[in-house]
Amino acid sequence: MIDLMSLCAFNAAYAQTIDSGALERWPAFFTEKCMYRITNFENERDGLPSGIVYADSRAMLEDRIAALREANIFEAHRYRHLLGIPLIESADEKGARARTPLMVARIMHTGETSLFVTGEYLDRFELTSGKLLLAERVAVCDSTVTDTLLALPL
Amino acid sequence: MIDLMSLCAFNAAYAQTIDSGALERWPAFFTEKCMYRITNFENERDGLPSGIVYADSRAMLEDRIAALREANIFEAHRYRHLLGIPLIESADEKGARARTPLMVARIMHTGETSLFVTGEYLDRFELTSGKLLLAERVAVCDSTVTDTLLALPL
Amino acid sequence: MIDLMSLCAFNAAYAQTIDSGALERWPAFFTEKCMYRITNFENERDGLPSGIVYADSRAMLEDRIAALREANIFEAHRYRHLLGIPLIESADEKGARARTPLMVARIMHTGETSLFVTGEYLDRFELTSGKLLLAERVAVCDSTVTDTLLALPL
Image 1 (cartoon, rainbow over the protein chains, first blue to last red):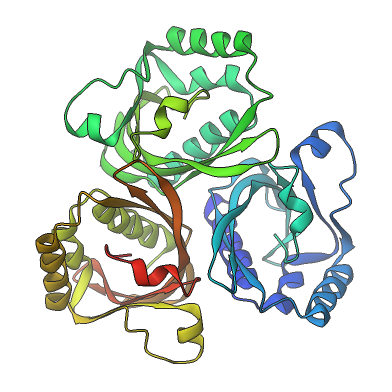
Image 2 (image 1 turned 45 degrees about the vertical axis):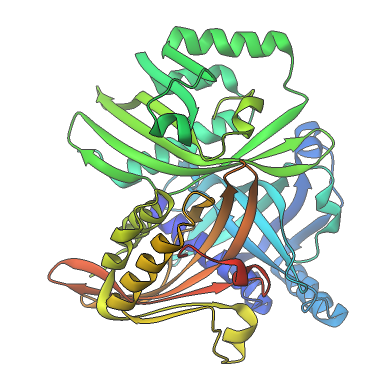
């Protein structure tokens, strides 16, 4: 049975991986066949595709990170995720559905800090061989504006 | 006995209800006879009434939501709550007192996002028939300014 | 064995002590011989000393608070900490190492509120006679700019 603390611990590791810049370790939080999307509140409500970020396998997530490394944007800015407590919608011994609120600050290399993204994760977790992984994470941004500026993963 | 995780789970559901716009479900987090107030740090410290928001029953909370629906402000902006871990001051099998820090971002329909409110909840929880409810929630805003712009519940 | 909930509860009390202005109680969260530093991401990455805040004993922390009281800056502004879930790096019955993301808002006496600091705590906890204390807390700010404006403890 998946409990709240294990989801909290998972999310803490997930956020720290991104915010510390260890992006090559980020795809390992997902199942091989997975769904990762970034969209915004309006598009998600209306059932529209977002076009911002879309990947349906861990390999695509790895490609995305490789492309980011080539684009060499890592010195330009960093993110700081602050995640809330997950709201578990269903959970059993095989998986869980949960939604988790998030705030992400963006820190430019000049030091300028701003509240960049707010929103929530809509998640489907799978527990396989004792290991918790994301089969699906949809990051729904509250704003319809800032999402187009996204470079690093949410 | 009320534990930290049950308060965390309660708060996660509370915040998600407001931020998803399902405001009609918000009063159900309170006991029938309850206290809900929004005030600011200075007034609370000096024992002054705040005049911002005050309700002493679930029925009053329902009236407030109905009034908000009629005023039709829901398209204008949304909130995103990020709540900290509660600090439990006392807890037994019947209830608990706790305080929980909060940050609330406001997202305008233009997409503009700002850190709108910071503060803390001063809470008294009651556990009745296995169900946790708020007998009292005082939202104490750190700023003496932004609180007058509040429309949605904190 | 130190678990995630006990670290969460510790951090909730720590943050509330600072944000409520009860700064004289802040040094009691540390062991007598301890390390408390505030630095920024770049200096920490490069192994450079930060020069912002440095203390290697609880007595030095007490001195710092006394100096702040004399400087009488407490009416000028307040902080609101929002801390994430700790990422435990190691834990046994004697202590734990963890890192915890943080966002700190600064609220000026005019009411102006801003996202002031983001970063993470790098912590070493000790469990002595059933009491959890910080043997080391390094607050690493993401920005290289705002840290020089710090007055209150992080």
